Length: 162
Image (cartoon, rainbow, N blue to C red; front, side, top):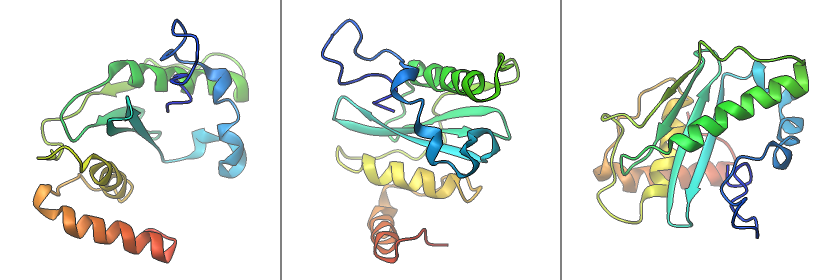
């Protein structure tokens, strides 16, 4: 998502602004090259090289939801992701995408919270793990050691753990 928002642009006036040109080739790696046939698009987001958050685009539900283990919501990123969908629709399908049914959802009160300053990456991975299994994230800080082990096992097996 940093590429989408031109976070490394040397021109400070352009840094942080949505830029479809930077990401228009992303969908070439999607099976069938059509993101609109996917169920989810999970987007890890790094904030100022300090904190990991994420957003998930629920294609069937027409919803983009923010997940932050510190409880924040970056509405600019959510709006940028919706703009990405509109731009991708225009580029791949032609015409304007009707976004009237789409909903942007900020971080929920029920979203698990970290209790330290260094587990945000684990929380971000676990948000993806739960959401892509159609489950609400229900883990807590006390589960992070097991979560780290689950992530390590997934990496070693080169696949998500069921």
